[in-house]
Image (cartoon, rainbow over all chains, first blue to last red; front, side, top):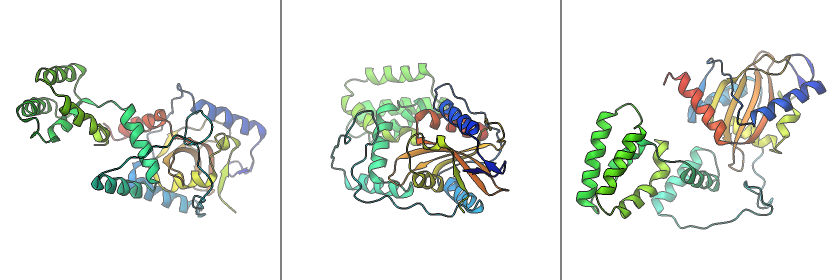
Length: 200
Length: 98
């Protein structure tokens, strides 16, 4: 394997140095030192820029599609054998959103589902996004309780237009919601919507 | 001759090269100068791609790019970790002045 910057094959010492660096990258205490130059892009912009850049660099070979029928892959975890399988029925509109997201990300539907479940189970709601989500809920089933909660949420949003709510504000909001009575259904619906919170 | 070169370290996690290239072609995040070079004799900054392999698994890929020599040296490929995503988000936030 050659390195054109130095115009020669990588030495064993260089291979070892790259291996040591790759090990460092995997450690929790690794901190990159970005220059602040160049581009930093997301989504369609990232894809368009990167494709153009790779074409400019002469990387033209197309990756082969995922081979069919190569068996079930292990999708993470430390155990051996096939990963556990779950089946779930989805409302049509949610299924449509899922398919749209998978197409947008050039990803398998199963991969998007794994990511969404992982995100849902590992990401706590952030203050401002949590309140914004509350405002979007249909208040009909909860009538007065939800209206009071939304009114309070609106005031908090007005007080914090540009920043995340502090821990105290979140606790205060939680206290208000609790004192509004039995909010089990309300909270259940909020939890159900958490998966979209920090994607806003 | 392909301009993509792979160090031994790029294969530490047994990710197929085609999957890494797929992630680089379809990144969800691309940071051109994510880190500085840390191996003697290599001065180009490190670029980071976060994207999906052919089977949809999210990957993180790091490489040196040399436009002048038309060279890509890929040295880090593995399934995306939350820590890497956090680092990328922090850098993007800082670059946007947020």
